[in-house]
Image 1 (cartoon, one colour):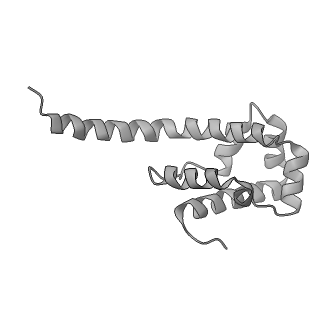
Image 2 (cartoon, rainbow, N blue to C red):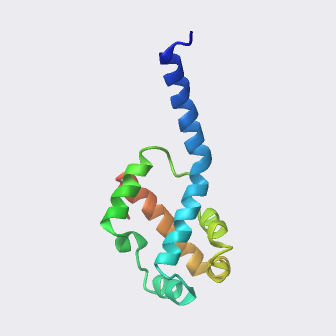
Image 3 (cartoon, one colour):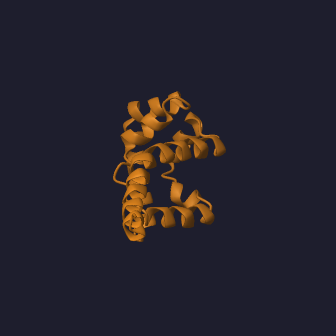
Length: 126
């Protein structure tokens, strides 16, 4: 007979491993859904870059709390500007191209990602 504690032990490891493997795909889907919800286009990104708007400040507090809880499950080291650009490249090709071709937009995106990571980990921002 199988020891139930062993099943629990290995199932926990398997679940965590499965979560780590599937997490980038889930996050890519969430990014695309948020871009659709926010009607992101070149004009909106240009405005945000030029006026140094913070995406964190625009997130609904419910989303902020959900992100903080999700971050406790794993790290977000995979979340980089390249990851975001790749994630949106099929559904938002013009915006992805803007991030790649306009240095200020690429820098803004990198700053937003770093700020997001700091916010959800409880660190203070610059």
